[in-house]
Amino acid sequence: MPESFVITMDGPAASGKSSIARVLARRLGALYVNTGNMYRAVTLAALEAGLDPADKPALRAWLPSLPLRYPIHEGQVQVELGGRVLSSEELNSDAVNGAVSLVASEPAVREQLVTAQRGMTALGHLVMEGRDIGSVVFPQSPHKFYIDASAEVRAQRRRAQGQDDQVGRRDQLDSTRKTSPLVVPEGASVIDNNHLTLEQAVQAVAQLLRAQGLSVPEGDNP
Image (cartoon, rainbow, N blue to C red; front, top):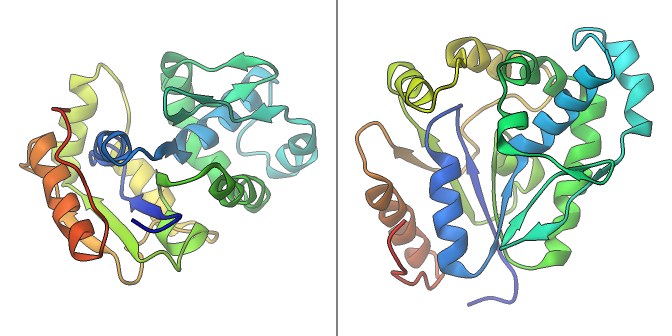
C-alpha cells in the first residue's frame, strides 16, 4: 500500500456515499472525512449568528471570525465550533438542510473549507466525501468515485431517516452554482447505488480500488 492516498467520493444528497465512505475508511485504516458536515457547520453557525444565508456580503464579512476546528475521534474527522463538537442532529436539522446549499455556493466559504480539506492530507490516509472532492479538492487522485441514485430513491432514504430534505432542490442548486458545482469528476468511476445493499456498494468500490493497486481487506460487516 502506498505511503499516502486520498479516496474521493462525490455524489448527490442521500446517494449513500457517506455510508460507503465510512465503511471503506474503517477497513483501510484511513480517516473518514464528511466534507458536507463542514459546510453544514458553517451554515449552522451562520443561522445561530442571525445571518440570512442569502446575504452574501454579510456572510463574507462574518466568515473570518468563524472558530472552526477539526478534531479526530475514532477514525473520523469531526467538526468543532467554538469548542463545541457539533452533533449529527444539529448538522442535519431541517433549518440547516434548507440553507446549506445557499451557504455552500459562496466562493469565500468554499475557499476556506477547501484549504482545510487539502491540509488534512497531513493526517494520513483519507477517504473524503462531498460534492467537489474529485473535481476540485483532489482532482489528481487516482481513486475517484461518484455515487449516484435516482431522486426518488434518495428522497425515500431521507424520509426513512426522518428528515425533510428537498433533495431535488439541493441537486439543482448544487449542480448549477458557479463555484465548484456538483459534477461527475473526470476519470471517476460511477457507482449506480439505486438497488445495492451497503455491503454490495462497498464491494463494488473495493473491487475497483484493488484494480488500482490498493489492498482493501474484506473487514467486518457494515
